[in-house]
Image 1 (cartoon, rainbow, N blue to C red):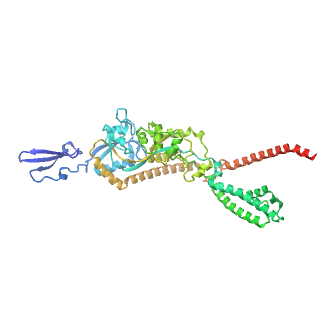
Image 2: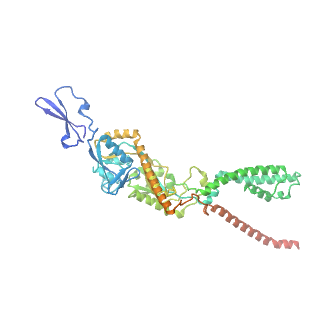
Image 3: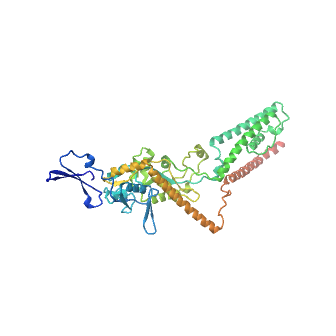
Length: 520
């Protein structure tokens, strides 16, 4: 308690001694402090009777319970067995300790759990349990300010905002043969197909009208409709003309036709090169509806987030909560997510070209469903994916969904009814208004990037030293996988040509007896 006033009568001379407590005094002898001796003069002001006793905590030791949870908290052990702690949440606590003059000692949860969860008798384990049983003064570990916690602990104002979302496996690249159709949208392919059909009809009609109009000097080759169609297809493919018309109306038509398809061919070739050399990834799952349609079970640590999902305004989130499963740690949740993807690789559904082009800039999720999707904060997922689930080429194997369940404020946790909550809140409000939380996060990201770049440069230097030169020239030749679309078309042409030859041969054999009989 901080606002305590003690009144002690003094008989000689007749007066009243006013005293107060100093709850965070450095020694036991200083815990009672004399404020004033009152001898009948006007009563003291309120600020004299109840001074601010939390402006200086006189180095009072505070026990802070936390654990390793990047990028909020890094707990790295050195060679001497000591822990080097840093991170956004750690820096917030240290800023408060400097401003209010108290000392901190960081400890892990006494039972080895992380946040913990509620037991059947109403007690909690982990960090929450230590605060509930007053084994610590402050708890910090990416703590969401949520209503279920207030039954056992108190929490501060939010000093940062975090978003709760699911993580899913990255579905992987599309088959390379689909690159042949990706340069154009489905509507463009439809327009080209219709244009070719209409152009064949118009050109055949113009040729026949020319012959009927007396243009007999035109080559008889153009009287055949299949010949004119073959000529137009050759122009579409930018190949040389097999025949050249002599009449003006056909030449005008052919000139404009060739010019139009030169433009289309150049655009197609330019885009095709990029799709052949750079593999297009399948769109990942990004909405709760897509996750629900694929029958994926979800889960996280404890069941607190399950209760949050059950009360969510989105009906898809409430249905996902029915398949919620508890996991013991973040590593287990991520492992189950990755293994779920591995178990469904053989059941990958190849997306259609129409599905890909229907939303070029906002792909639907076409990935195979994994068996489990882990739920955690976006900051933690983005960091973990970048550090642990991204290969040397920068390709990630996990993807954090864009759609999130809800935003949550991040705050400090305390045992119930501790006296310094209001004072801490005022200091936290100043900290957030100054933008220090964002600065702490930027410094952490920069520090991790510099460490990763330094390690990569060291490995590259060692590799160059072993090889004596650059290990790679930077040029990657196209493989059979890149060009599989062309070979598939070639095989299709071989097959269709063989089938047509067989059909013509069978037709000739079937009609030959009737022809000989007609001659007789």
